[in-house]
Length: 385
Image (cartoon, rainbow, N blue to C red; front, side, top):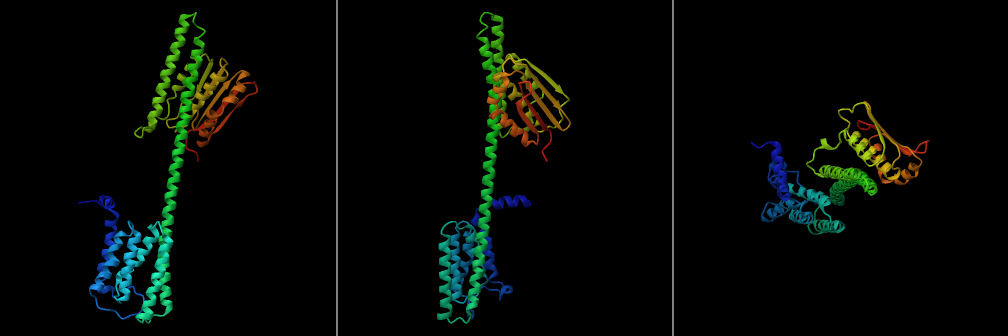
Protein backbone atom coordinates (compact mmCIF):
# COMPACT_ATOMS: atom_id res chain seq x y z
CA UNK A 1 0.00 0.00 0.00
CA UNK A 2 1.35 3.42 -0.98
CA UNK A 3 1.80 5.84 1.92
CA UNK A 4 0.40 9.36 1.87
CA UNK A 5 3.86 10.91 1.54
CA UNK A 6 4.84 8.54 -1.25
CA UNK A 7 1.61 9.32 -3.07
CA UNK A 8 2.32 13.07 -2.87
CA UNK A 9 5.83 12.53 -4.21
CA UNK A 10 4.51 10.55 -7.16
CA UNK A 11 1.79 13.13 -7.75
CA UNK A 12 4.22 16.06 -7.87
CA UNK A 13 6.39 14.19 -10.36
CA UNK A 14 3.56 14.20 -12.87
CA UNK A 15 3.38 16.88 -15.54
CA UNK A 16 1.48 19.97 -14.45
CA UNK A 17 -1.14 19.46 -17.16
CA UNK A 18 -1.92 16.00 -15.81
CA UNK A 19 -2.29 17.42 -12.29
CA UNK A 20 -4.61 20.18 -13.49
CA UNK A 21 -6.83 17.92 -15.59
CA UNK A 22 -8.91 16.47 -12.68
CA UNK A 23 -10.36 19.91 -11.90
CA UNK A 24 -11.75 20.20 -15.42
CA UNK A 25 -13.12 16.66 -15.27
CA UNK A 26 -14.77 17.46 -11.95
CA UNK A 27 -16.59 20.45 -13.47
CA UNK A 28 -17.62 18.35 -16.45
CA UNK A 29 -19.16 15.67 -14.21
CA UNK A 30 -20.81 18.28 -11.97
CA UNK A 31 -22.61 19.73 -14.99
CA UNK A 32 -24.65 16.51 -15.26
CA UNK A 33 -25.52 16.10 -11.57
CA UNK A 34 -29.09 17.06 -10.62
CA UNK A 35 -27.92 18.39 -7.27
CA UNK A 36 -26.29 21.36 -9.05
CA UNK A 37 -29.41 22.45 -10.92
CA UNK A 38 -30.05 26.13 -10.36
CA UNK A 39 -26.33 26.79 -9.61
CA UNK A 40 -25.33 27.47 -13.21
CA UNK A 41 -23.20 30.43 -14.26
CA UNK A 42 -24.97 32.58 -16.83
CA UNK A 43 -25.08 36.06 -18.31
CA UNK A 44 -28.50 37.23 -19.46
CA UNK A 45 -31.79 35.70 -18.45
CA UNK A 46 -32.60 33.64 -21.51
CA UNK A 47 -34.71 30.49 -21.13
CA UNK A 48 -32.58 27.30 -21.05
CA UNK A 49 -32.04 25.26 -24.19
CA UNK A 50 -31.93 21.46 -24.30
CA UNK A 51 -28.53 19.77 -24.20
CA UNK A 52 -27.31 18.96 -27.70
CA UNK A 53 -24.08 18.57 -29.67
CA UNK A 54 -23.30 22.30 -29.52
CA UNK A 55 -23.77 22.20 -25.76
CA UNK A 56 -21.36 19.26 -25.59
CA UNK A 57 -18.77 21.29 -27.50
CA UNK A 58 -19.24 24.26 -25.17
CA UNK A 59 -18.98 21.97 -22.13
CA UNK A 60 -15.76 20.42 -23.39
CA UNK A 61 -14.25 23.85 -24.13
CA UNK A 62 -15.06 25.15 -20.64
CA UNK A 63 -13.69 22.09 -18.81
CA UNK A 64 -10.86 20.30 -20.61
CA UNK A 65 -8.63 23.36 -21.37
CA UNK A 66 -8.34 23.91 -17.61
CA UNK A 67 -5.61 21.28 -17.79
CA UNK A 68 -3.53 23.93 -19.61
CA UNK A 69 -4.20 26.75 -17.15
CA UNK A 70 -0.66 26.79 -15.74
CA UNK A 71 1.35 25.50 -18.69
CA UNK A 72 -0.35 27.69 -21.33
CA UNK A 73 -2.61 30.15 -19.45
CA UNK A 74 -3.42 32.28 -22.52
CA UNK A 75 -4.56 29.30 -24.58
CA UNK A 76 -6.57 27.96 -21.64
CA UNK A 77 -8.31 31.29 -21.07
CA UNK A 78 -9.10 31.69 -24.78
CA UNK A 79 -10.65 28.22 -25.11
CA UNK A 80 -12.61 28.47 -21.87
CA UNK A 81 -13.88 31.93 -22.85
CA UNK A 82 -14.90 30.60 -26.26
CA UNK A 83 -16.83 27.78 -24.64
CA UNK A 84 -18.44 30.25 -22.24
CA UNK A 85 -19.57 32.52 -25.13
CA UNK A 86 -21.03 29.53 -27.00
CA UNK A 87 -22.87 28.40 -23.87
CA UNK A 88 -24.32 31.85 -23.21
CA UNK A 89 -25.34 32.52 -26.80
CA UNK A 90 -26.94 29.08 -27.02
CA UNK A 91 -28.54 29.53 -23.60
CA UNK A 92 -27.01 26.31 -22.30
CA UNK A 93 -27.02 26.87 -18.56
CA UNK A 94 -24.08 24.80 -17.29
CA UNK A 95 -22.24 24.61 -13.96
CA UNK A 96 -19.07 24.36 -16.05
CA UNK A 97 -19.35 28.13 -16.59
CA UNK A 98 -17.46 28.39 -13.29
CA UNK A 99 -14.43 27.32 -15.31
CA UNK A 100 -14.20 30.88 -16.63
CA UNK A 101 -13.49 32.17 -13.12
CA UNK A 102 -10.80 29.53 -12.63
CA UNK A 103 -9.25 30.37 -16.01
CA UNK A 104 -9.22 34.09 -15.14
CA UNK A 105 -7.49 33.47 -11.80
CA UNK A 106 -4.94 31.18 -13.46
CA UNK A 107 -4.25 33.66 -16.26
CA UNK A 108 -3.79 36.49 -13.78
CA UNK A 109 -1.36 34.32 -11.81
CA UNK A 110 0.62 32.65 -14.61
CA UNK A 111 0.37 34.83 -17.72
CA UNK A 112 3.73 36.58 -18.15
CA UNK A 113 3.35 38.43 -21.44
CA UNK A 114 0.69 40.65 -23.04
CA UNK A 115 -1.27 40.93 -19.82
CA UNK A 116 -2.77 44.33 -20.67
CA UNK A 117 -3.68 43.16 -24.15
CA UNK A 118 -5.47 40.16 -22.64
CA UNK A 119 -7.50 42.44 -20.35
CA UNK A 120 -8.50 44.68 -23.26
CA UNK A 121 -9.51 41.75 -25.46
CA UNK A 122 -11.52 40.12 -22.68
CA UNK A 123 -13.34 43.40 -21.99
CA UNK A 124 -14.16 43.92 -25.67
CA UNK A 125 -15.36 40.31 -25.98
CA UNK A 126 -17.58 40.68 -22.93
CA UNK A 127 -19.11 43.94 -24.18
CA UNK A 128 -19.79 42.28 -27.54
CA UNK A 129 -21.39 39.29 -25.78
CA UNK A 130 -23.61 41.56 -23.70
CA UNK A 131 -24.62 43.52 -26.82
CA UNK A 132 -25.58 40.35 -28.70
CA UNK A 133 -27.50 38.97 -25.73
CA UNK A 134 -29.50 42.16 -25.23
CA UNK A 135 -29.90 43.57 -28.75
CA UNK A 136 -29.98 40.42 -30.84
CA UNK A 137 -31.33 37.72 -28.57
CA UNK A 138 -33.39 40.03 -26.36
CA UNK A 139 -32.06 38.93 -22.96
CA UNK A 140 -34.20 40.60 -20.29
CA UNK A 141 -31.41 40.96 -17.71
CA UNK A 142 -30.91 44.62 -16.58
CA UNK A 143 -27.56 46.42 -17.19
CA UNK A 144 -26.49 46.21 -13.54
CA UNK A 145 -26.42 42.40 -13.86
CA UNK A 146 -23.90 42.63 -16.70
CA UNK A 147 -21.85 45.15 -14.75
CA UNK A 148 -21.83 42.93 -11.64
CA UNK A 149 -20.65 39.92 -13.63
CA UNK A 150 -17.86 42.02 -15.19
CA UNK A 151 -16.77 43.23 -11.75
CA UNK A 152 -16.66 39.65 -10.49
CA UNK A 153 -14.48 38.74 -13.46
CA UNK A 154 -12.16 41.65 -12.62
CA UNK A 155 -11.93 40.42 -9.03
CA UNK A 156 -11.01 36.93 -10.26
CA UNK A 157 -8.24 38.38 -12.43
CA UNK A 158 -7.09 40.54 -9.51
CA UNK A 159 -6.81 37.50 -7.26
CA UNK A 160 -4.60 35.83 -9.84
CA UNK A 161 -2.48 38.97 -10.21
CA UNK A 162 -2.02 39.09 -6.43
CA UNK A 163 -0.95 35.45 -6.39
CA UNK A 164 1.51 36.19 -9.18
CA UNK A 165 3.03 39.19 -7.38
CA UNK A 166 3.34 37.11 -4.20
CA UNK A 167 5.09 34.33 -6.11
CA UNK A 168 7.45 36.79 -7.81
CA UNK A 169 8.27 38.46 -4.48
CA UNK A 170 9.01 35.09 -2.89
CA UNK A 171 11.24 34.10 -5.81
CA UNK A 172 13.09 37.43 -5.50
CA UNK A 173 13.50 36.92 -1.75
CA UNK A 174 14.95 33.45 -2.30
CA UNK A 175 17.27 34.77 -5.00
CA UNK A 176 18.46 37.54 -2.70
CA UNK A 177 19.00 35.13 0.20
CA UNK A 178 20.93 32.77 -2.08
CA UNK A 179 23.08 35.64 -3.35
CA UNK A 180 23.77 36.87 0.19
CA UNK A 181 24.66 33.33 1.22
CA UNK A 182 27.06 32.96 -1.71
CA UNK A 183 28.64 36.33 -0.93
CA UNK A 184 29.06 35.44 2.74
CA UNK A 185 30.59 32.09 1.79
CA UNK A 186 33.00 33.73 -0.66
CA UNK A 187 34.01 36.18 2.06
CA UNK A 188 34.54 33.36 4.54
CA UNK A 189 36.67 31.42 2.05
CA UNK A 190 38.70 34.56 1.27
CA UNK A 191 39.36 35.10 4.97
CA UNK A 192 40.40 31.49 5.49
CA UNK A 193 42.75 31.66 2.52
CA UNK A 194 44.16 34.95 3.76
CA UNK A 195 44.75 33.58 7.26
CA UNK A 196 46.31 30.31 6.14
CA UNK A 197 48.40 31.46 3.18
CA UNK A 198 49.62 34.76 4.62
CA UNK A 199 50.85 33.25 7.87
CA UNK A 200 52.73 30.31 6.37
CA UNK A 201 54.18 32.22 3.44
CA UNK A 202 55.35 35.04 5.74
CA UNK A 203 57.08 32.52 7.99
CA UNK A 204 58.74 30.86 4.98
CA UNK A 205 59.95 34.21 3.62
CA UNK A 206 61.43 35.22 6.97
CA UNK A 207 63.15 31.83 7.39
CA UNK A 208 64.48 31.89 3.82
CA UNK A 209 65.86 35.41 4.29
CA UNK A 210 67.62 34.32 7.47
CA UNK A 211 69.10 31.30 5.71
CA UNK A 212 70.98 33.57 3.30
CA UNK A 213 73.26 34.66 6.14
CA UNK A 214 73.97 31.16 7.45
CA UNK A 215 76.19 29.86 4.63
CA UNK A 216 79.14 29.82 6.99
CA UNK A 217 77.29 27.66 9.50
CA UNK A 218 76.07 24.50 7.70
CA UNK A 219 74.29 23.11 10.75
CA UNK A 220 72.25 26.25 11.30
CA UNK A 221 71.62 26.55 7.55
CA UNK A 222 70.28 23.00 7.46
CA UNK A 223 68.07 23.77 10.45
CA UNK A 224 66.69 26.90 8.78
CA UNK A 225 65.95 25.10 5.52
CA UNK A 226 64.26 22.30 7.47
CA UNK A 227 62.04 24.89 9.12
CA UNK A 228 61.13 26.27 5.70
CA UNK A 229 60.25 22.76 4.52
CA UNK A 230 58.15 22.04 7.62
CA UNK A 231 56.31 25.33 7.22
CA UNK A 232 55.54 24.52 3.59
CA UNK A 233 54.17 21.15 4.60
CA UNK A 234 51.97 22.71 7.26
CA UNK A 235 50.71 25.21 4.68
CA UNK A 236 49.80 22.33 2.37
CA UNK A 237 48.01 20.53 5.20
CA UNK A 238 46.02 23.63 6.15
CA UNK A 239 45.08 24.29 2.53
CA UNK A 240 43.86 20.71 2.18
CA UNK A 241 41.81 21.17 5.35
CA UNK A 242 40.29 24.33 3.87
CA UNK A 243 39.47 22.54 0.62
CA UNK A 244 37.82 19.80 2.66
CA UNK A 245 35.53 22.43 4.14
CA UNK A 246 34.37 23.27 0.62
CA UNK A 247 33.38 19.66 0.05
CA UNK A 248 29.58 19.37 0.58
CA UNK A 249 30.09 15.90 2.10
CA UNK A 250 32.50 17.26 4.67
CA UNK A 251 31.17 17.13 8.21
CA UNK A 252 31.12 20.04 10.61
CA UNK A 253 33.21 18.30 13.22
CA UNK A 254 36.50 19.29 11.55
CA UNK A 255 35.82 23.00 11.35
CA UNK A 256 37.30 23.98 14.68
CA UNK A 257 41.03 23.29 15.03
CA UNK A 258 42.20 21.58 18.19
CA UNK A 259 43.51 23.83 20.90
CA UNK A 260 46.85 22.05 20.62
CA UNK A 261 47.34 23.68 17.23
CA UNK A 262 48.06 26.93 19.03
CA UNK A 263 51.23 25.37 20.41
CA UNK A 264 52.25 24.32 16.91
CA UNK A 265 51.53 27.84 15.66
CA UNK A 266 53.64 29.41 18.40
CA UNK A 267 56.50 26.97 17.84
CA UNK A 268 56.48 27.68 14.11
CA UNK A 269 56.73 31.41 14.81
CA UNK A 270 59.60 30.82 17.20
CA UNK A 271 61.46 28.85 14.51
CA UNK A 272 61.04 31.86 12.22
CA UNK A 273 63.05 33.92 14.71
CA UNK A 274 60.27 35.57 16.69
CA UNK A 275 60.56 35.27 20.50
CA UNK A 276 57.08 34.28 21.66
CA UNK A 277 55.83 33.68 25.19
CA UNK A 278 52.67 31.57 25.25
CA UNK A 279 50.26 31.30 28.18
CA UNK A 280 47.04 29.28 28.18
CA UNK A 281 44.63 29.34 31.09
CA UNK A 282 41.65 27.09 31.73
CA UNK A 283 40.31 24.27 29.63
CA UNK A 284 38.13 24.70 26.54
CA UNK A 285 34.45 23.88 26.88
CA UNK A 286 33.08 20.75 25.21
CA UNK A 287 31.05 22.82 22.75
CA UNK A 288 32.45 26.22 21.77
CA UNK A 289 30.89 26.63 18.33
CA UNK A 290 33.20 28.82 16.22
CA UNK A 291 34.90 30.49 19.18
CA UNK A 292 38.03 28.30 19.16
CA UNK A 293 38.44 28.75 15.42
CA UNK A 294 38.17 32.53 15.69
CA UNK A 295 40.62 32.55 18.62
CA UNK A 296 43.09 30.52 16.58
CA UNK A 297 42.76 32.89 13.62
CA UNK A 298 43.32 35.94 15.86
CA UNK A 299 46.56 34.50 17.23
CA UNK A 300 47.62 33.45 13.72
CA UNK A 301 46.99 36.90 12.24
CA UNK A 302 48.70 38.71 15.12
CA UNK A 303 51.81 36.50 14.92
CA UNK A 304 51.92 36.92 11.14
CA UNK A 305 51.89 40.70 11.52
CA UNK A 306 54.55 40.45 14.21
CA UNK A 307 56.80 38.54 11.83
CA UNK A 308 56.20 41.02 9.03
CA UNK A 309 56.40 44.32 10.87
CA UNK A 310 58.15 43.67 14.18
CA UNK A 311 60.48 40.78 13.46
CA UNK A 312 62.62 39.95 16.47
CA UNK A 313 60.44 41.88 18.92
CA UNK A 314 59.28 40.11 22.03
CA UNK A 315 55.72 38.81 21.64
CA UNK A 316 53.34 37.56 24.31
CA UNK A 317 50.29 35.39 23.60
CA UNK A 318 47.70 34.77 26.29
CA UNK A 319 44.59 32.63 25.78
CA UNK A 320 42.04 32.17 28.56
CA UNK A 321 39.19 29.65 28.32
CA UNK A 322 36.20 30.62 30.43
CA UNK A 323 32.85 28.97 30.99
CA UNK A 324 31.07 31.22 28.51
CA UNK A 325 33.85 32.95 26.57
CA UNK A 326 37.38 32.78 25.26
CA UNK A 327 39.68 35.77 25.67
CA UNK A 328 42.76 36.33 23.56
CA UNK A 329 45.52 38.88 24.00
CA UNK A 330 48.60 39.22 21.80
CA UNK A 331 51.14 41.90 22.68
CA UNK A 332 54.15 42.86 20.54
CA UNK A 333 56.79 45.02 22.17
CA UNK A 334 58.95 47.58 20.43
CA UNK A 335 58.44 51.01 18.88
CA UNK A 336 58.68 49.64 15.36
CA UNK A 337 55.55 47.53 15.74
CA UNK A 338 53.15 50.45 15.94
CA UNK A 339 53.59 51.73 12.40
CA UNK A 340 53.96 48.26 10.99
CA UNK A 341 50.73 46.97 12.47
CA UNK A 342 48.88 50.09 11.38
CA UNK A 343 49.90 49.40 7.82
CA UNK A 344 49.06 45.71 8.04
CA UNK A 345 45.75 45.85 9.90
CA UNK A 346 43.55 46.08 6.82
CA UNK A 347 41.95 42.94 5.55
CA UNK A 348 43.28 40.55 8.21
CA UNK A 349 42.39 42.39 11.42
CA UNK A 350 39.26 43.93 9.90
CA UNK A 351 38.07 40.47 8.93
CA UNK A 352 38.75 39.20 12.44
CA UNK A 353 36.77 42.10 13.88
CA UNK A 354 33.78 41.08 11.75
CA UNK A 355 34.07 37.47 12.88
CA UNK A 356 34.10 38.45 16.53
CA UNK A 357 31.18 40.84 16.04
CA UNK A 358 29.11 38.07 14.46
CA UNK A 359 29.61 35.97 17.60
CA UNK A 360 28.64 38.91 19.82
CA UNK A 361 32.12 39.53 21.22
CA UNK A 362 34.55 42.44 21.50
CA UNK A 363 37.67 43.08 19.43
CA UNK A 364 40.34 45.77 19.58
CA UNK A 365 43.72 46.25 17.93
CA UNK A 366 46.01 49.21 18.40
CA UNK A 367 49.16 50.63 19.98
CA UNK A 368 49.70 50.38 23.72
CA UNK A 369 51.23 52.85 26.14
CA UNK A 370 54.73 51.33 25.81
CA UNK A 371 54.92 51.88 22.07
CA UNK A 372 54.09 48.31 21.09
CA UNK A 373 50.94 46.84 19.64
CA UNK A 374 48.25 44.78 21.31
CA UNK A 375 45.35 42.74 19.95
CA UNK A 376 42.54 41.81 22.36
CA UNK A 377 39.38 39.81 21.79
CA UNK A 378 36.56 38.44 23.92
CA UNK A 379 34.70 35.67 22.10
CA UNK A 380 31.49 34.16 23.53
CA UNK A 381 31.38 30.37 23.20
CA UNK A 382 27.58 30.30 22.68
CA UNK A 383 25.35 31.80 19.99
CA UNK A 384 24.69 35.50 20.33
CA UNK A 385 21.29 36.39 21.69
